[in-house]
Picture 1 (tube, rainbow, N blue to C red):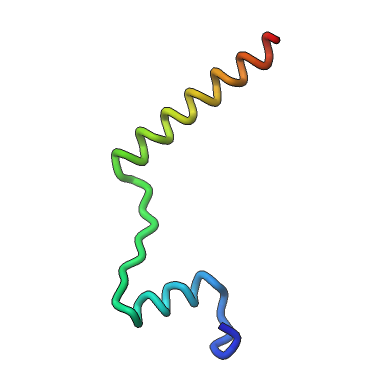
Picture 2: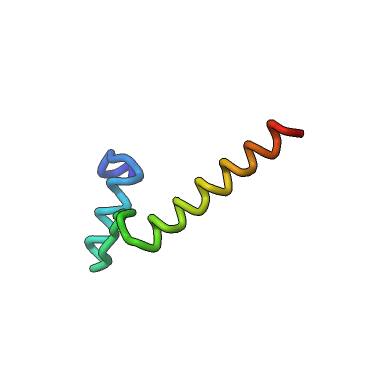
Length: 53
């Protein structure tokens, strides 16, 4: 948004507000926590595999 001279993130929130859209970046849901935990465990196992081989 060159006219308002703001960063992309600020422009995103501004336009969403004008359109009546709620943008929520909250990662505290149980589903997100479970997914992050699974990815973390997978990453550890992958690291172990590559250290051994």
